Length: 549
Image (tube, rainbow, N blue to C red):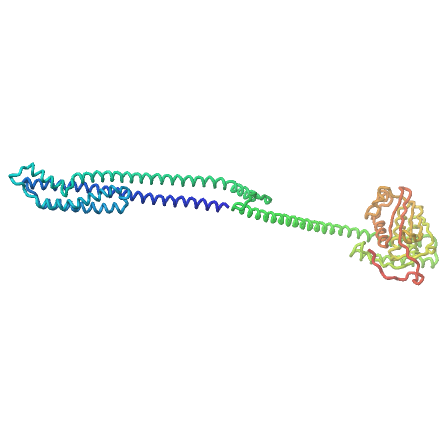
């Protein structure tokens, strides 16, 4: 993982720095020791030089005294004290050299130094004694002999050539001092080289680490940056293709998980938005349907007014026709007037029932009229319809041809008043669109039951009137539709008779159909389900009311 590699690189750099520090400390310590050794060597060399100079000055003082030049005793004591002090310092420096491993490099040199100091330690007391015993040279003694005796005392005290001893020591210490200085310079050079090498090594390691991590981090960072930009642009399906177990792969996995959740939320939001749009669309459709329903309700209300006028006009016309027929012509018997008035009263009652139904229809419209269906003789509504239609036919100069109602035997499950209304609508429509002097035929037949269908009534109303064009037949049962021929033949009319008749036929479980030829007449065929005859039920007896669908 990246953090492990970074940790190892940092540990390596830290180790290099610590190693550099350790080496630097060691080099500094070595250089410090070399410097100390060089200082000690320099001090020993200076001590021997001072010992030589002090001995030479003391020699000069003794020479002056011996040759009669006089001598300051204090100067003698100072010089002797300085020689002793220098010897003590040299012994201390020699011991310091031994303690600082100065002697370990050159054991012969250390031994010679120690032997020289030991010899000086023996010689200085002799010089002190000789110095204290020095007297002016007698007159009978030659100066040359005195100087030789003095030189012999100073230079060969203790049987050792002090001048040579000190000179050798000075040369030896000079060489040691030069050697230690060279060692110190070499140590400093080594320290500088070590510092430069360690600094170069540290720089190379840092540069290598930088190059390595730059290459190792560039691609993952570019991929992560590209993934973040893709997510920022709304590309929720984008996934970062980093594999492995390092930190970048973990970050990529986290970002992919976040992108997946964002995509799911986006899809859920889109689904909810689509659902909301569907709900809005449904509500809009419902409002549209409600508005359309209101519009259709208004249309039906208008149609209702037309239905009311049509429903009221038919019985009113029947009453007026009955009265006109009765009043026209020669005087009639009271029995005939009574029959005519009876039919007028009956029609008026039916007119009142129609008004009641129309009031109900005003509340629920025509499709929801209640029918009281009961087993009745088919002859009853047929006789009622023929009685009213006869007056309409006489008023329009149309002849009616039909079978006597009493010859029709059989039952039907129907509402007597509605079935009479249905038959009267068919007869009224045939009479109105017939020419004066024309004939309207009514034929009623009971078709026996067969395996494929039950028994049924077939009622056919045919006229010889204006007929209906073939292209207008599919539209004939639409409300308020009137063809061109119908408008030219009879200007008045609402186009509601046949639609109402079709609705009444369907309410009775039957079917109404028309066939026609232009200028040759029209034939209306009504099919109603027949009811088996039950002698236990009297004619017109009421059965359980039914409400048709």
